[in-house]
Image (cartoon, rainbow over all chains, first blue to last red; front, side, top):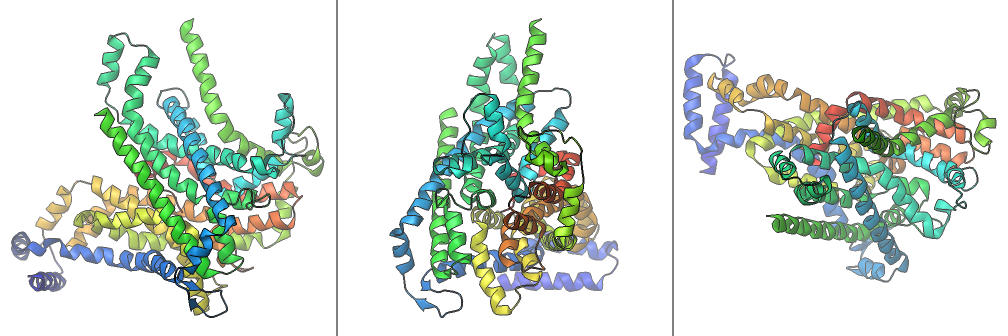
Length: 326
Length: 272
């Protein structure tokens, strides 16, 4: 049967190619009949996908396989690769710098997921109301997420500067003592979170706003008729209905927060010391400063497992949140 | 009275939401237009006393900034064009075949950090002797542009009515003809959004260029980052360079924000 399907596909192609005027009635009609009768109706669509499939295989699937394979080798660029089995993974498990990088990543990620979710949802509730200049203001609110990360990171670096930075001046206006910002080990990660919140709350806003726009209006009208306060409406109607969208935003945010690279690399380079070195920064160092391809590949695999595991946890939470509302 | 107060409070809330987003860019603009006296002044000067373009001049004098600009245009332009050429038919094929598993691959790709693609591709480019040219940078940028394109375009084709296409087929159009003459023109808005977002995220990308580019093949974000490392104190030129890189994106965002909003909410997509 599969042969038959292919054959029919080729026949059809040949037939079409020989027929330069497709509007001619009779062949078109018989072909339509043929298409309805044969199960291989859809197969020509495969050819639409083939070029993209080849490209995706080359630039995405091949690197996955290569990485998995290379993580089993001790290979520094310029020397020979030797098979070492799981040794790279074992050495990572004992590498305190790597274990600290995991902790830094988790610390950063928790804050960089939760805070943008809160601010983004508030912004979505604001932009869901009609007010003058709404379109333009929403466009301005989106600028941080669309701007070139390196460019905004440079500006934040200058703003964080302890002596000449504008942030310490603003603190002084409020009567607060100057801060060391990213130059302090304890504050480096919270400062990077601040940049991330500023940069990515807009994306959460967009996803939640899309959700708010799709909500039915009846429950709100009914609640108003019953005399519910706006807080009650928010707490018991808006929030539960919009929660699935917030969870979608949470998954997106989780993935992006784990992958954060540009801002950290430009603003702190993982410093001071290794105080803000996340897995991604550690990975970059292993791969492109030390050229330890085998070890770096093992880091990628561990990292990927972490991303998938945390995403699954969120998906599970999302299913639960749906379930409890139903 | 209560209504006016409500409106005022809401206005304040809007201000609190939008002000942080915009003020960082205003500060960038202010820094880039200040002369050295204003830059070093404390308390900081917010509105330059004598605005000057000297910082922008310094950026162009400091290195082949214009050729880095051309590099960025070539890299992002080619990566986007190829992604459209390959990705639009793919998005169409996926919706017609209902092959949503391929979209899953793309979602998983989005979960993988960009550097992990870079390690294998870097070693291949080295083996092929391609490092130091723009080719590897264009190819790696397709890691960003292709998934965005396929994802957005597939989503767009799904919203199109199939009736027109079926009518075309009934009239004897081949699937290729009905794709080119019926579906493709209908999908033009979706394709535009995909192209714009792919271009922006490619333009913004730093890490691929940072690893793969030589002195001559730097893209703009890499060039700007290098301004930081070599001239730590020169804030004016640094802000000017940062503004030059991101200004096209900011203007584009403000002008076509409706389209961007539609494209981004379609799948919460973003470049890696």
